[in-house]
Length: 172
Image (cartoon, rainbow, N blue to C red; front, top):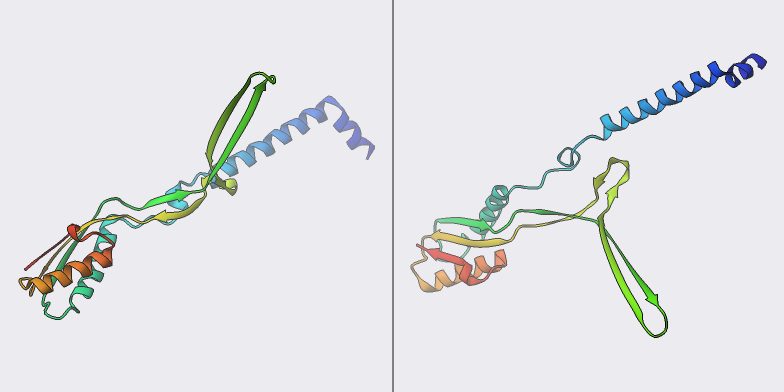
């Protein structure tokens, strides 16, 4: 026991202890870099692309329109205005300070917004996804030469896609 104490208190013991501590810190740093170096795309599921969303909407609208009396073959095209956007948690801090005496007071305000990171991975904390907006739709269907059927199809598509009727084009 006395030999170990003498070794650690001596110059050689201190050097060995310092080198060992530096080696341990280096190993910790390297393990953090190699494990935590993943990008956002690797750690979360990718958002659906616009073409997939358009195809899904087209299929659903086509199924809806084909159930309207007087409509035969249907072809639908949907266009999107934007793509999906990820929404990240943000921490907002505001600070108001007052300076001066009773005759004159100067107030200043400072706002800061920071993206909240999740855990030790240093990745932004995603709280949701904003789905893309529909720009418009075009429908080609048999039976659309009848104005009543064309109106039914137009209103059905507008309601289903939550867009105005002016953004829907129906033809035969």
